[in-house]
Image (cartoon, rainbow, N blue to C red; front, top):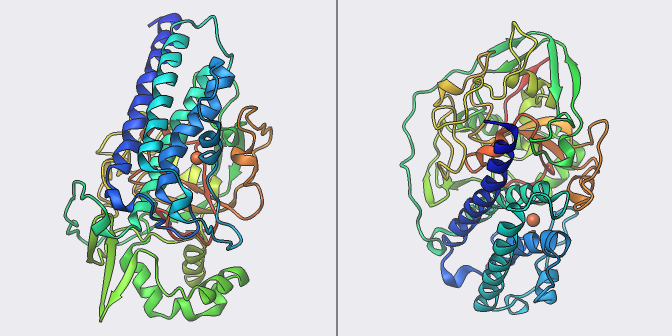
Length: 443
Ligand SMILES: [Fe+2]
């Protein structure tokens, strides 16, 4: 295909991708029973109704005026639904359901935005010579912003009691053989972090630029994620009571909030129970454990190991023992499919570790992409040459505060487009709701 035809295809695909992304957030809101839409499943976050308006207001606020010269038809809602909350510092929102507009009002706002934007997007994509110079990049921002919300909304609805959700397709918890994780040797080499500025066709967020090479000395990494079974041993060994395993802030957090096990677990008599998206099951021992960064770090300390650095993760996932060239996915060049891992909205819950051998990396490490974000010990910080996006300057820069850590890979609810090696996720270390797991390394 010629360069011109490729460009036309790319433009056409963008609108389709925006519509597909909308279907993902619609699917999430349709899980919520009508009476629960004003609930706040996570105390530090907004009520669900906010997000119904937010994913649309974001698109509108970014594109309407700037890209298409459209006038606001509801400035009050544009502002009300503009910003989410990053829960740092413990201050909780105090608004009441009655502070929010009614569902029909929000639905009307959503419909009108979609109608107006769809018309404008269609028109603009057909006329590449006119329009805003950053239009394509901005459209990709709206698509990935929405897909990220499709994932973070899943964490949120995970906390909503089952009787407030309309049951989605449910896979029975798999019975799986226990896999013994081994330490795999990862030979010294280079990791090419980030995206080249010249990769014009490829979209990346500001924090993915610029590309730079990092030398990685040899190290060893767990072949499999730490499972619920492994983590149970940490609990039974008194890990949550052993102050020496926790940093001062992590210790203050688990003490204050009385945290004694992962957020996804609970106790019923002598039995450990696990909360899946649509109900409780007996603790699936072979699933990767989902925990906060602080809990993952305490576990690694217990074993006298560490979480991998971002560069170590990258080397283990995309490098190979015998070559200088990196692979676009741990398994090689092939586009991501259900054989390679648990991602792209295929499941609401994890699979047992090692269930996708076709996705194993060149170094023999399993599940590096999908089935849960992987914690690193790297603080979220700008790459050399970082420049904030002019139309969304706070996207990353607001989080370069030494209070967030990089997570890599992806979860069952991560869209395939965000499985690219340069994509960086980040969370604060005491946020326990994320689909994030980990493995340890020895330097
Ligand atoms: Fe947002």
